[in-house]
Length: 104
Ligand SMILES: [Zn+2]
Image 1 (cartoon, protein in one colour):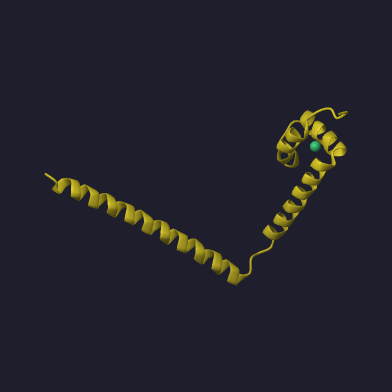
Image 2 (tube, protein in one colour; image 1 turned 60 degrees about the vertical axis):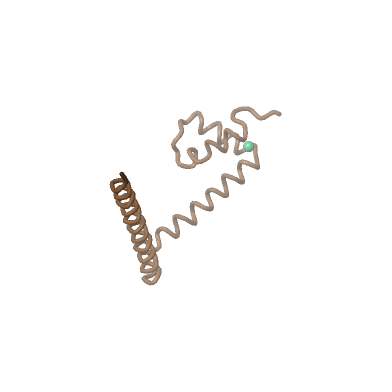
């Protein structure tokens, strides 16, 4: 191996930090150098960039009204389910307490 600096594992581990510019310049350079030499890591990097572009593009678009309503509705449904689960849990506790109290 002629490759110096971080190996693939390390490069991939720091890839997200590298993309977000959240690592120091020295590490950045090491990863950049590794990406230049290593096609495996470079394609992982490219893929991540493509995904991010897609995500940011879809996030900048306003969701159409029917979709918004669907999402809001499913959020409400989940909230109701959580609420019911909470009630069931409290009821179970109450029943349990009553059972214990009525026992001799
Ligand atoms: Zn690599």
